[in-house]
Image (cartoon, rainbow, N blue to C red; front, side, top):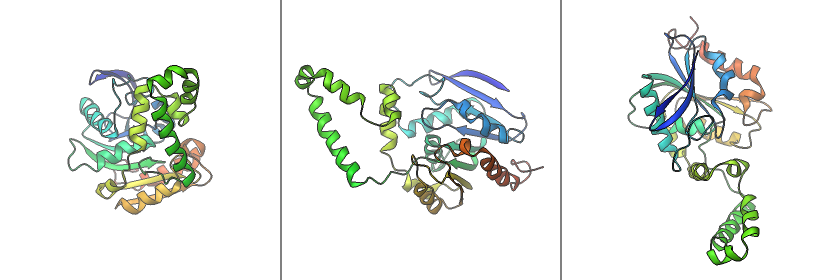
Length: 269
């Protein structure tokens, strides 16, 4: 086991490596705002046959926050740099939620300095949600009020009321984030990666919670339809953290999938 930090692009990044030194690599990409240690259970399912890297993306967990808001493409660039620093030239990528966004960005590129052997996406983000008429009305009202409240004279006259209103806007993830990470979140949720899915050529396993409300099962079916070599496993009754809500079924899905792989590529020896 190797826990530590390293400097990447001027940022201190927290990471953890487990598993045999001579095993093929697996890299776990975390969901929005989580600590990479949340995925220790996922790593524990595979670190008997993989060398597993977990790390905190900039602005998440114990890693430094970037000085400005990043988009998903920048996080993909950062991941390329990190894997190069660790001399990882081939790996299976596992992504939960936001981590799935980064993996889709990476896998859809024409060229990468490392090889993605296969992909596992767990309750992945990346599909733009369908807005209901009520949501569209609220969004329009928010934009009008924000423009009004950003007026310096209006803010001077009603600062306490406006500050209270602003503190109650957005999702919990948005309210809990720093100003830099709020900008990052806004860039992510407004980006639709559907058009990139056909360019993901790697064998891809999709694992989804049936009752996920953050990235609904509709998103899973869109990914399965558009990623050429993909298959979907649904965990009944589970939500957005399906790997933690039904760990036994999640483990069964992962083990069944990996057991079918060739020897030397994570399969059963």
